[in-house]
Amino acid sequence: MKVLVYGTGGRDQSLADKYGDSQHVDKVYFVPGNPGVAYTLKGKRGLIECFDIRDFSEVSKFCLEKKVDLVDIGSENPLEEGLVDVLNEHGIRTIGPRQQYVRLESDRAFTDDILRDIGVSKPEYRVFDDPEQAKEYVRNIGYQVFVKANGLAAGKGAIGCDDVPQAESAVEKLMVEKIFGSSGDRVVIEERKYGTEISFFVYLDGQHALPLKMFVQDYKRAFDLDDENAIKEFGGNLNTGGTGCYAPHKLLSPWLVNKIIKEIVNPTVNAIYNRGDLGLGWDYKGVLYFGLNLDPYNNLDVFEINVRHGDPEWEVLSRKLSTDLFEIGMAVWEGTLDQIYPVWNNQCYVDVVAMEGRSKASKGWNKGYPGRYGKGHQVVGLDQIDRGIAIYFSGVREDQDKGLVTDGGRVLHVIAGDATLEGARERAYRNIERISFLDHYHDNANCMRYRKTIGLEEIQHL
Ligand code: GLY
Image 1 (tube, rainbow, N blue to C red):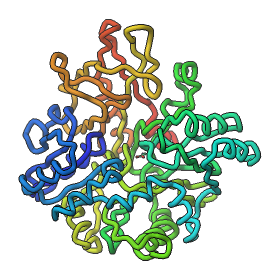
Image 2 (spheres, helix red, strand yellow; image 1 turned 45 degrees about the horizontal axis):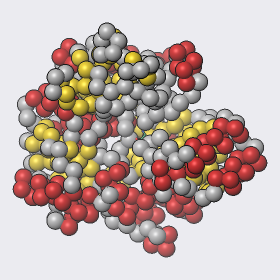
Image 3 (cartoon, rainbow, N blue to C red; image 1 turned 45 degrees about the vertical axis):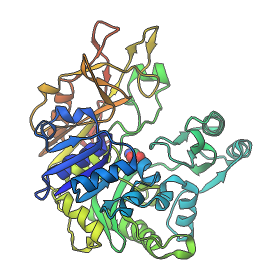
Image 4 (cartoon, protein in one colour; image 1 turned 180 degrees about the vertical axis):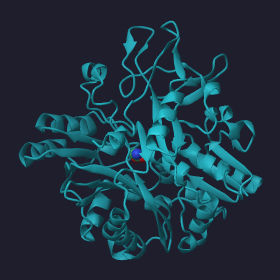
């Protein structure tokens, strides 16, 4: 069987890698893909091959020519641009929602209103199109809030605010400075909840729901709490598109999984399939990502719903999943998910994200991700990585002279498994330390940065 995974980042590469593990699959096309794949085992063997095709009708032509059996789309942007609709018109099997269904992620206010109408718990919220009214609201509300861009913002559109000046500034950034473009034309201001953030994933086939009973938590903070350099440079409290993840989560229990399915997943999926009166009634085929908060009193709230896997959540979940992904994918397409029973291996996994750190610019210094960061730094040490460690690339390109170089703030993921979380952490950190990003303006000093605490809270029982 031949599978095509559409995407470029680490989550998309981990999808390609997982399909490459399938007993049914002998070829994975990763389109447009990323040049890091050529440095991995499956890339070198030609099992995963990248083709830089971006035009959707060309992707469709490619699928027909190569007789691709299944296409999986990893991220929200091609879904929103209608890739599934284009492929389905040509009879190509896909996993991922059609364009109109992406609204669940690309229009927060729409989804929040649905959740409220069907009685699924979520924090108090108000929607604003006018920045002055939004600022007036945060001045009067009294409690702490999240200010959220209504549209897509690569998982970074929610700004947590400790006080009124921060909330006013968040409104200004999203609605006036437009740091996420037109996604900030409208904002949702939501009561800030405290507790544990949980990412929970469910496959849908248009009739059934298959919950993945293995939730995880994204480490969204850019820095460790005790990172003094970060506190000096950035004030410390910055969110990113995810700096790491571990599995299984310390709170994972059948009780909590049942509670999530009963209180959140079942009513939401029922509405998606059946509630034409709410603008739904959809034959949704793909992944639903529930961003949840569990408070100290065991109350669950939905922060957001996305229409794809999480990044970096999927990078560890895909390693932990033993079930053949091609079998899940075909069941999504054929409407037979009720016949799939996911199996998880008994390993622990840790994903540490290597980011661009402080580097020398042609003039002055780059602070590093999530501030201004340098690019074009040679990535070295990949040949020193132990067997069994997965490396997935998020921000790299191939340079004619230097080979693989950095091309983004989050550059690559190092994922290690072991029988214990301590062991998985030790392996992940031992291997990431073998990788360097060479700062060519600064005597080739290593300008890579990563968080040191991924999975640590579990070990220390914090
Ligand atoms: N983990 C955040 C996201 O994928 O949006």
